Length: 229
Image 1 (tube, rainbow, N blue to C red):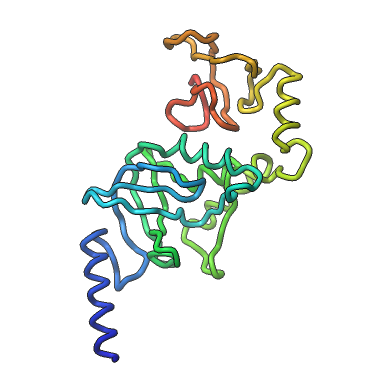
Image 2: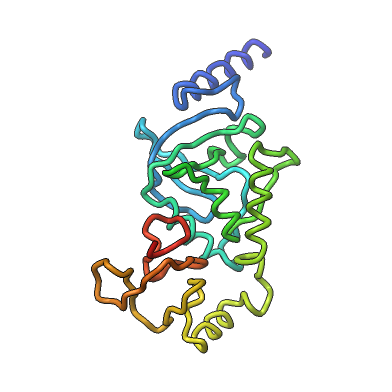
């Protein structure tokens, strides 16, 4: 039995090595590149690797609301805005497993221009830090700094009057300011807005404007949290 178990482990390691080019004794360390093809929810995405195979990725170190929970739609939309269709680098963490119990690959998702998807979501208030089985992940310190910023907004306000969807929308409408944008008063009844100098039929806005919710007007084209830069 011991010999058989060893053979199976060696075979599994060989498969992962071929797939990710860096698997140390079946640990969580690996690097792979691919393109994001689908957003499942705020912390889970599908990535097509260079080999042509598609992997479901569970982002390490974060947890976003589940379907039916407060801020689920906003978190999912934020991940879609940041990652959909982007070329990404998946990086495993030797302190964690390679896959979770559902078979999803566990990885940090590095976006173009060196931005960490998980960090962006935590800093934006779309995700909370998640430490599995008390096994601290390598980027925990950085994520804690991001969470200190994110605590003032997003899902952290769920359950308060300001965060109830209908109340927030009503408040924004009464002030004639869209709740998805900070530092500027964009009319929530407008069908569209366009950045100054761009094409389109909507009113022109000279930015920048911070995007703090679903970017319904499509002003943040590069997904960095600011529109009309």
